[in-house]
Length: 119
Image 1 (tube, rainbow, N blue to C red):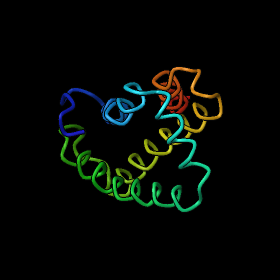
Image 2 (image 1 turned 135 degrees about the horizontal axis):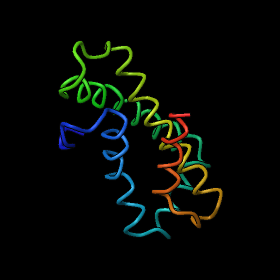
Image 3 (image 1 turned 90 degrees about the vertical axis):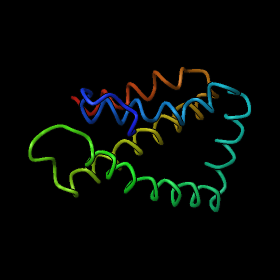
């Protein structure tokens, strides 16, 4: 997130920051699909993933707070909501990708999830 260009808006920076997560799925989609399916269908693994992502939320929110932009910057609450929403988009895109046996393009699904926020 911190490596994103300063002239990107927060949503674009969040979306592009998630490309790091998608890179794993692009490198080995067959293994990624199997792993994602296993995690999503095993309650303990799913809970651990959500716990891990919950730890990402304040880090993303802090990275947003450090970005140049609106003066004044959004409140810490608003930045946390943006970070949580971005992670929610990721999870929904992964759910759709997994339910479709990895056939749709995961990047396109994540783009569509973020685009739904603009509506």
